[in-house]
Amino acid sequence: MMAECDFYMTLYDDFIKTKNDDKNKVLWKTYKILDLMKITTENNSNGFMENGLRMIMLLFNNYQIDSYDLNSFDFSETSIDKKEELQIILKTEFI
Image 1: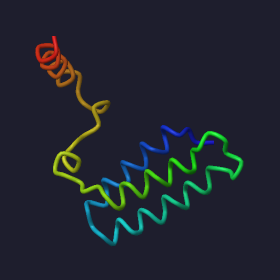
Image 2 (image 1 turned 90 degrees about the horizontal axis):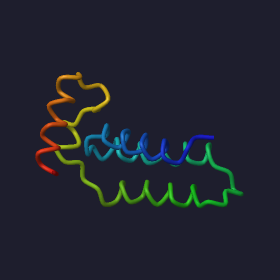
Image 3 (image 1 turned 180 degrees about the horizontal axis):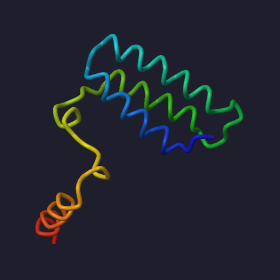
Image 4 (image 1 turned 45 degrees about the vertical axis):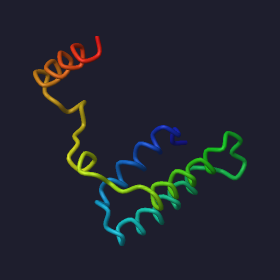
């Protein structure tokens, strides 16, 4: 069974790929509800299905993707030099 955290991460990543296109968002919502139904059971006691549906509907109804989301990149795929540069910036900012 897929971990709840993994589901939410792919949920958001796939939502970003819709780029605010209404047709793509409708398809995204439909496929994600189907995915959620496949990975959960009706006896799920921790509320995963309910929470997943809430998250899908929240994103679908209320969230507009901004330029930050569209232009962001995966930090784990960043070069070591860029990671070190970012760490220095963050340390000076928050220490």
